[in-house]
Length: 123
Image (cartoon, rainbow, N blue to C red; front, side, top):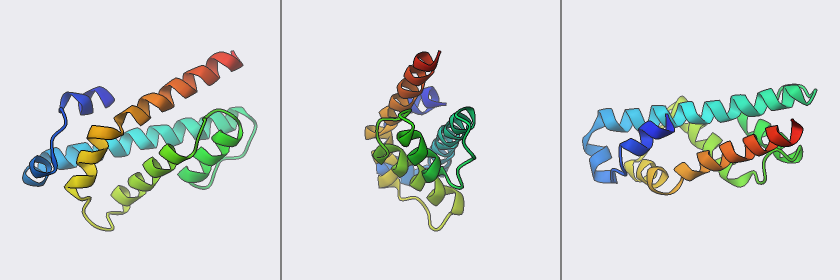
């Protein structure tokens, strides 16, 4: 899914505002990627013998506490974005989506690297 987002290039806010299908596809792919992040955190908590977190933000925070993730900041913002998209409080501004595509897709790669490093350490 991350590869799909990258293959779309980095459409600017104007292109996202013009093309509702592209905008919705980007929103949905980002939503799913964040949900995977939350699910992985929940699974790691379970493997550590801990009860499930009551929210995505809590799952991330607890994985930081366990030393699985290095920092809460990037991931907390991802969870906030996902919550916004799911609850559809308002339309996601094209500028926000363009900013994520241009500057934050690497946050998903960072998550992947941190999880893989943890798994290797735990063996």
